[in-house]
Length: 615
Image (cartoon, rainbow, N blue to C red; front, side, top):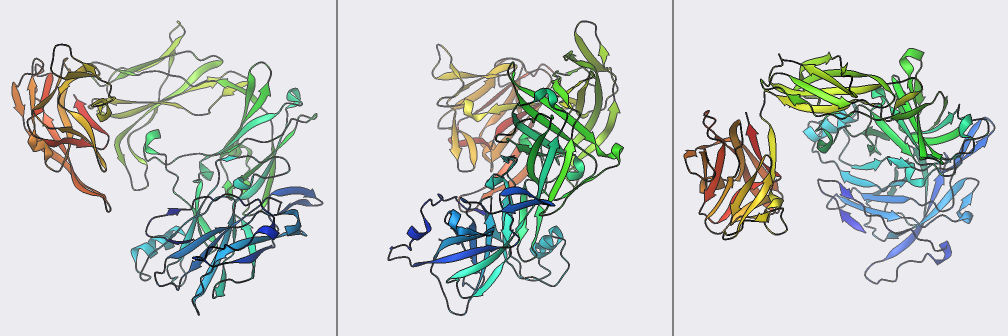
């Protein structure tokens, strides 16, 4: 069970839960491994899944079926990075006495004399762990760690950190918590020599138990609540991932960054907690209790709750309530390891979708018009425009060049609305934000602006995917030719011969073994330049031509390396990545390009695409 954990985080694979009785949980008979059983006693506080109402509050206790993960760390080991992970046996009713629980764990015997062992147990998510490496208090890794944890005390030697995750989808009900929706970590216990018999662990909950009493639902008496979303405002923006330091008994959140596929390295402004409750129904008095487990912290600005309630006609009905805490002069405290209780009412039917439009840039490329169909149950639209330079500051915020500017949409009288900026916009990336204004008694399904990006006065980016080449690619044969093909490529197509895709370790590549060509079959208007990715100097092995008709070698273009970077996949691949620009003449008669060569091997490479730019 020993693992060697190096510089990156190592995921711990989940093992199957043992369903056998404790009496049958026996040491392994494998002669190659010696094992022994130990008992882990969970002491106060008695925090676990069952939440039971008692005089003065609520009580949480351990439940049958629970199990924990034990991390065994030997800082005195020769390699210094030995960590073992064990899963306990499943709790039986007889293992729980007066709310306290005893778990059985089978350890792999490993007892170098005089060494120190450290033990930490986790409950809920699978633990991920890694070791920080630093040499002294001036080491940059140590300084980064100290900054993240806001630590200013005496120097602490390198040690294991635990990465845990608050599950995005939770399934608590009015009486119990999904074990994977809870996060608990024990205090560290240090022993001289490996643990042999029994150990007492004190667990603490990371996060807050929340009971939200939903009110004002009389017309939905007896209906099941199928799903709920608690959406916190920016004052409570936190990542789902938490990094726990058992030396400090403190945790921090990972940076809350939007994935690139959803907008690109931008800090997210909201934290969503989604629950799919089991057997939660609206009571006769129009109330229902929604249980959740969230982070600790303070919510000071706003939040919203969206409910999905079963409905005979539509299958489900979406209700929503948004609360502005600033106007009410209130805050909500989510106390670490404790419970927060509040109520929410005043629901609206959330039946208004966002808008959809395709902004059209004018001929002068200094303005635009956006038109969209009127949204049902909307009485108007909030609209504003912002612009950014495509770069981000040190905090990950987009570098805004054009401040948020309100725009006034107009009703066209034909079932559509539009907004126009006639001219005057400088070349930049712009974002148009549009949000319907709901009629009384209605609200948005997603209380967010619809976002539409556009480039004004800047090149457009077209994507040319390598997977279109070669076997199973999206290409068609050209009749009467010797293995020539065409690939759809808006606004025209590309015709090619003797080229196929090739996967070269970390790269996707195009490859040839004889004379080859690739050219545009239709004019690409306003072409200004092409930028191709090249592995090392492979761009020197082919030529790029501009012409007024397809596949003419009228004017050879000279490639200029505009960007160089190193690609290094440890133990597998090292290469230089070069982006090469071929600039076309200003004369717009040169609207076709041809790329050709007679070399073998890799001719062009890119991890994702070729990128073409236009005026």
